[in-house]
Amino acid sequence: MAKSTLSFVCQNCGAAYNRWQGKCESCGEWNTLAEEDTTGSVPVSIRSKRRGRTFALESLTGKSNDAPRLSSGMTELDRVTGGGFVRGSVLLVGGDPGIGKSTLLTQATSMLARAGHRAVYISGEEAVAQVRLRAERLGLADAPVQLAAETSVEDIVSTLSEGAVPRLIVIDSIQTMWTDTVESAPGTVTQVRASAQALIRFAKKSGAAIILVGHVTKDGQIAGPRVVEHMVDAVLSFEGEGSQQFRILRAVKNRFGPTDEIGVFEMTGLGLREVSNPSELFLSERDLGSPGTAVFAGIEGTRPVLVELQALVAPTTLGTPRRAVVGWDPSRLSMVLAVLEAHCGVKLSGYDVYLNVAGGLRIQEPAADLAAAAALVSSLVNAPLPTDAVYFGEISLSGAVRPVAQTSARLKEAAKLGFGRAVLPESARGEVGSDGGLTLNTVGGLTSLVAEIAARGSPRNGGAGNREASREGVTEKNATPARFRRENS
Ligand code: TYD
Ligand code: MG
Image 1 (cartoon, rainbow, N blue to C red):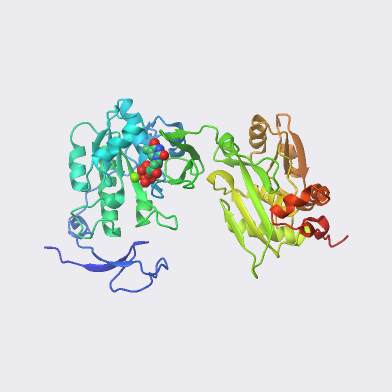
Image 2 (cartoon, rainbow, N blue to C red):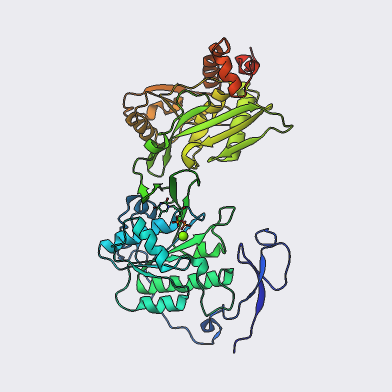
């Protein structure tokens, strides 16, 4: 009989220790060590003295078939996976509870089953009746999906080995699965890792594509072991604000496709609806004509996406003013604020600054710098930006506005959605192919843009602007462009 080995395993990163300690030295988290029985986690074959068999080595230039893909029937899902599920591959889908993972995967399995493929949905969290109820609500109850509520990996593998090989198997969720080969409780790192290993082995051997659903911890990582992320072929993250209808599926890792594509969905009473033109959706609830908003012409993967940036700059009562940002990189905001202070004479140290990307989108491009700066200054001087303008460009530490990739794609999308002008880096002018009839407003440095917005702000200090100014928490004195002290003026 195998000797029983107890060890303390970090539930965050999977590092193992032979005594308990408060802090995991590997990932730095506190109180994450739990006692686990790791008996049997080293397969007997590794410990045995068997001589290895020989295998043929191949050259790089050999002929291989393209990864055979299976379209899910949902364009947005296919876009993120890189064109469909690859045979024998394993995908991990993570996301907050209630974000719609089970809904998305019920829809995907139903589409495949309706197209005549064998699709299996194994739920470890919900009873068969609950899954059926959801399918009914989605209008998919007639799809020939094979359904079970099971948690034993060995039972699942033996059941699915019989009959035709399933084209897609959904395991909802990996945290509820357990295998006989290890002794730890379900949900622990050792169990999750061993269960995932067994399922991945089955996928590679049989050629079935498997989707594992994974829970997300409060700081956004897929709960349990990060090691599962390394074991699978692709990791998709399903995101969205609870209060918003939009859901964004993003590839975090993909061995068979790009990782910068996003899929956009809208949660409706009848399940997830695919959104093929995200810009229209993100701009649908625009607050036209209010100060502090700027439309950013961005690129997500291969697709241009227009989205509104909202800024609020308000006098602070705190010693250290607050800087809060949703949907963008906080260090990027700090940099833009520093450049505004250092090169454009905009004093922001007495103000709280809030920046929000509308619609729950998360922007990663530095191209959003210019739109963020425009929104911030617009809020500070209480002057709305032109409602028909889009902004894009990267700001360098010297205050120069630098060109960004795919200028013409951004302009084309803006023109398509009815915008009349674009504010963009001066050096990008050469790249502009067809601008679709947009008025191009090029800026070489941030100073000139700030001066232009500040000039728009001045007439509001006279009469009509006052009421709005106090509503925004910006006093009349604050709203005068006199604060734009230029060092040389
Ligand atoms: P679910 O797929 O169960 O989330 P997860 O598996 O990620 O935990 O989705 C749960 C939420 O989605 C729930 O709050 C209700 C909502 N929902 C709809 O709005 N419309 C629908 O058609 C369905 C099925 C769910
Ligand atoms: Mg679920």
